[in-house]
Image (cartoon, rainbow, N blue to C red; front, side):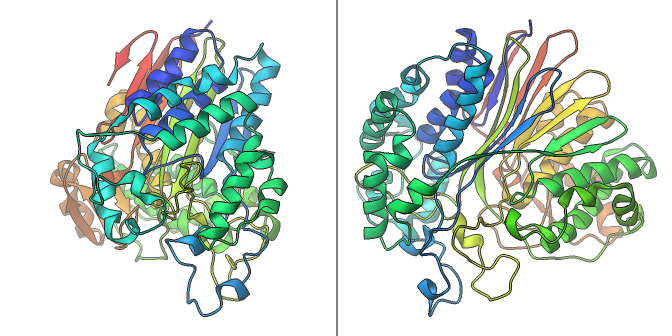
Length: 526
């Protein structure tokens, strides 16, 4: 028997998952309960109208992935966007792709039902329903997002539910989401499939069409979440796993596979570690930007980028004493990551997202569901790697991570933060595994970000001031285009990790940059 553990970037989601684990539920059931809750309490970051990606690990078995990301609507053609230079980021025309998250919940619960007798869906969704009905406390993160999007979204139909008498939300006040509560109650009663094949699908399709979206009821009927084989790479410390296309999971694996080869170039200190990881990130992003697209139009097997030959060629381009020139095009996004371990040692690494804060800004008036704007990752340029086509998936920054170490430890880890996701994963993993720092310290310590994250447009290297105090001069001398940003900055994402130790104990940590909570039955940490 293992001790249980859960971590999430909002404490209420952790409590929801923890309660299911303590009642004997599976890691998947706990994650669905937390996913529903965090869709309510962190509505700017994720929701039922977004996407999800799962990595699920049973002891002694290869992890499996679930791709619950949405495809472009059948009407989402270049002609539909005639006259536009790019797909709009907000409004009805930004709602281009189906929402896959809820189908992913069901796909995962189907797996869980093979493990043991399932809990009732109503039990898993009750915590989320209670929060939507009774109101959530507006966090600093939600207030900041509300202020940021106010001018762009406040006039959109249905968005008034996220306003305070037409004004931005204020931290410490409460926000009730009664329409969403009714939607969650309906799903609890009739089942999650209603989102795609029932009255809920009909309501959503009508609301989206009225808002100007190309999504129709047929797109709901046609959608399926898919079980996928994760990408993986063997390193000197163990085997690492992440999601295949259309995610940037390949970039996360390349960074750590390269660091495994080159970390001895450094002196063992944090500055050399950061430099080498930043240089590995550049190699990973060049490969990612060249190849990652919808799985149907990949020009190579992404797993081939993790071959010895490929990794050796990338490693040769990395030097300890100088930085490669940058930038390359950046991606951004907004999301949540959560991880857990149940009493049988089954672990989940999960990501759920709307893309930008509040996604497209389209709120279905009849359901209270916010729709994603992931389709804005498509290009309207003919022949582009990300050219918009019906029934294809856009590029995703989302990528939940998992590792099985040679010493018997198993680690579920991840973060939000768009372009920063692979970098933050690499920082916390390297600190914890290669540099043997405590898990909580590996996440809390000062971080860096190359390129763009959610809500940002610059491509330079941003370094938190506590880390910059020690590292900036050396990094600048090596040629990094660096600016310092305040310490413990939400710009750097909301990271977390759950570790199952060989003897069955767990360790869990969350990011002080979030409103999170990490719990394990052996210890509790905020």
